[in-house]
Length: 282
Ligand code: AMP
Ligand code: ZN
Ligand code: FE
Ligand code: FE
Image (tube, rainbow, N blue to C red):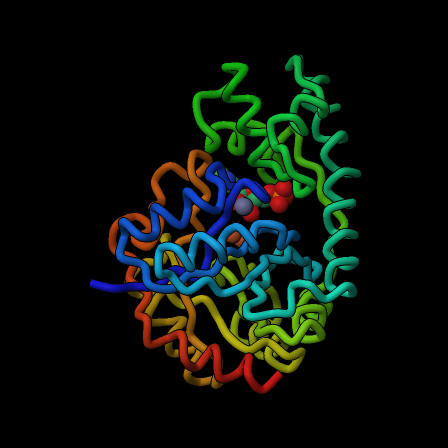
């Protein structure tokens, strides 16, 4: 049964498999089209596209941009964007630079807690300019300070934990504008991350729509059936595009598989045409 997967990470950000391996896993999972959505970087796209051609898998150019609305960290996925656009490239560069300002502060806090780690080690392990907390988690695993990435986040790296340091992030409306100015389609990733403030969930998504949001990631690895149907209803009510993906990362999220999420994810290929139609109008 064919399926698509519009949310995948590679070694070009904090995933643990290179694009070629992700594509091979997608082939095994009967994925006919996919989007590589690395955090703040598009350098994995040429390899993904060339392997996609070999394997007969359609590769949609993508990116995932973290943003902060004052209450919640919201991730905005950009699809079908002109990823060679120099303005986009410069904007993504500023986001990667903010990672390099934050990460050494996280390392300082880990060292203060008695862990023998350096940022140089993290950078070597990451092998990319888009260095994220999952890379730090991987180093803690390698050095046997923790058994899993989950433990690294629960003990040190998650918001509110001893080594948590916030990073300068754009507002969601800026992230949306950056994607649209690169002629891409902007989609709210994993909507469960919205912290229900005074404005409420519906108010938050309505404001994002007014800022130019095109769609919402209705189908997602961790969604329960009732969450999926709730987000589907929301998308229909606000006339937003419906998308979906696994958010595959490899070893830092070991329970998530390409195309299948935790086993019951199914993103239907029919969702692709409406996305492409919006992109064609940009
Ligand atoms: P960063 O972009 O460096 O702030 O790192 C955030 C990324 O870490 C998210 O996009 C997820 O991919 C990952 N992440 C967040 N929480 C966890 C967790 N509990 N376990 C594994 N990975 C996580
Ligand atoms: Zn990630
Ligand atoms: Fe995300
Ligand atoms: Fe992601």
